[in-house]
Amino acid sequence: MSYHFQGLLETDARIIAEDDTYAVIAWRVKKSAIARNLPFLAALGDLAPAPAPSIEPLRQR
Image (cartoon, rainbow, N blue to C red):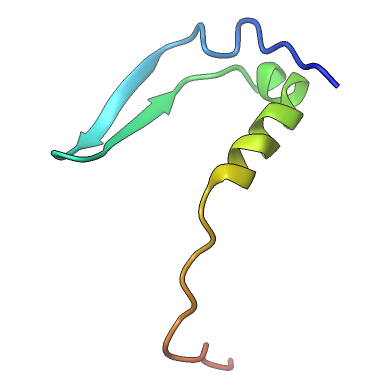
């Protein structure tokens, strides 16, 4: 299946934090663009590493 993400990244982008290794980038994207490109955003989420397991168990409320 092929997806086209035309226009999704043609928006305002800003570096909001950075160090010698990483940069945190924020994009201003219309909500309609997000809705049209959910497969793209899901694919980005799949690329993110899983969080490390917590050493301490979660507290019960």
